[in-house]
Amino acid sequence: NMATLEKLYKQVENIKAIAEENRQKENEAAVRIQSWFRGCQVRAYLSHLHKNATSIQKIWHGLTARALFRQRVKIQQRWRGYYVRKYVHDYYARKRYLEGLTRKNKHIRRDLEEVAELQWKERERITLEKQEKEKNIQAQRLHFLLSTKQCLGVFNSPFRTEPDETELRLRKVRPLLVRSAPKERKTPNITPDLNNLMPNRERLPPIHKKPQGPFRPALEVQQQRHRPLEPSLHVITSITALEEAREELKRQEWRTRLMHTSTPFEQVAFGTKHFREEHKEYLKGKKPFKTVFTTCHVFDKFGRLYSSAGNIV
Image 1 (cartoon, rainbow, N blue to C red):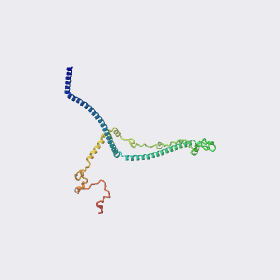
Image 2: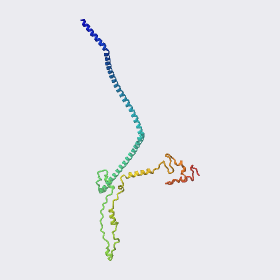
Image 3: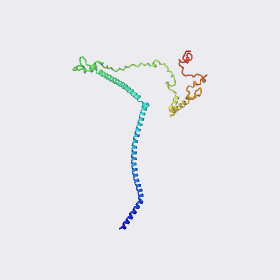
Image 4: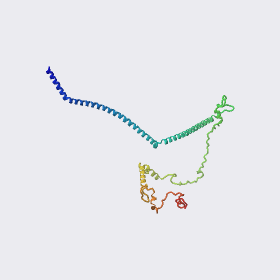
């Protein structure tokens, strides 16, 4: 038993010695494992925080960017509206135009209504006149139905208090006069016979050998019928003749255009406004300009009776 205890004691001591030898390594390994695990935890937590912070920043940045964009859009909208109303579509000018157009439309509508009313009255008048004329013609045709003192007419019944309108119209109009066709009168033929009156009369020769009338020679008529084709100016000219003529006129105008850098007196620098006042010695001995139109009578006596200051010489 003692030997066994000693043996166990020795084994425990060996184990303790081995444990003491490996304590540092195991401690370092445990520390490394713990640091790795805690690092994973911290990194996961930081990643979670970063994601949340990124989402918050993203929402905030989007919100501020949209607000700024709306402000810029509002500024641009107001500026463009002001520019369009000021320079493109003037609101007040448009308003004045619409007001004037409304007033003009009212006047035109009133005039059109008056014209329409006048036309309607004219048509009514013409219709009434036509009906009145037809009634008068009908009354003239039925004039034989007019009542007399002895016999009452069809339209003048004794059972009525007053005669009918047709009866009154028959009294006003005159009956139609029936005219017979004119008879043809037979007139005797009293044309004298020249042969019996002048038996010894000689026939005169014809005055002209060719037939009388506005006749042309046959050769001239034949030449006119077979004359060559004479195309019109529209057919002869090119389809681009108008554009070519305009280009030629532009080139001629450009060649003959007066430039400000040259004068008939002297070559002067560009920008000179009054070249005659700078070099007056070049104008001595020059002939004055000839005007196409006659001068005004008020200035004909300038220099003779009045000076440049307006005083009488």
